[in-house]
Amino acid sequence: MMSDRSYSAFIGKQLLAIGGIERISSLLYSGRPWLIGTKLVDARPGTFMRGCRPQLARMAAGYRFLENYVYVENGRTINWLQRLGFEVHFPAVPYGIYGKPFYRFTMGER
Image (cartoon, rainbow, N blue to C red; front, side, top):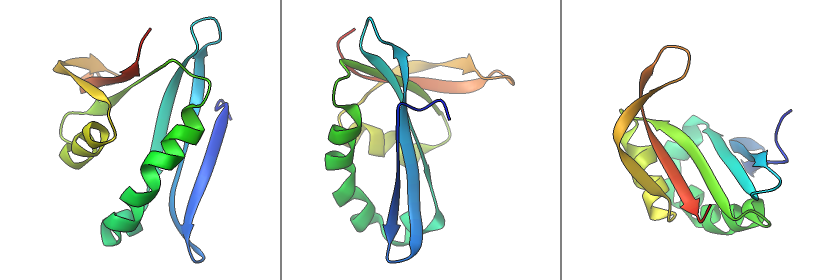
């Protein structure tokens, strides 16, 4: 509900993923991208990756800076973010209500 833009991706009638971008600041043109994938992402990784770059470009249009956090144990997602051009910042920082270790990731200039 807080997303400026959100999308759903399907393979046939099966949901592949949902994602979007939440506006952090209109003055700074910054946003917080997010994505939740289904098990179909693991079953069809090539299909998923082929759609990522163009969808990210559409979703991020009008934003100069993107940032969010990724859980340190989510290695596949960290690799995927880097392949898409995000910078993953080390070391991990406590994040969220439980203070678990997360890496901040960013794209663009603030």
